[in-house]
Image (cartoon, rainbow, N blue to C red):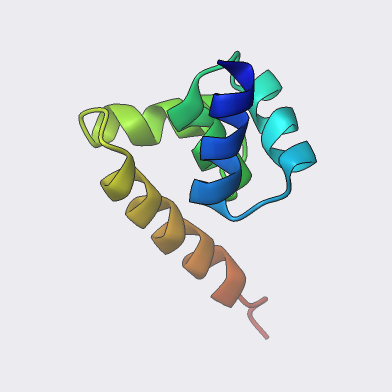
Length: 79
């Protein structure tokens, strides 16, 4: 089951098997949380909050994470 979970995280998040394994460890084995961590969530708590806000649905949680990451990537120091 661990190999299957690792494969799911690797595929869904587009990361290496080692990164997927690390995300799964940080997520306590929860696949959805691990996918969000591997996709860029700052912590398991943030991933859990995103899942809670989306009713446990991964796709909308990933969408919200992408929005958050886009905002932080475009943030600039005011001059």
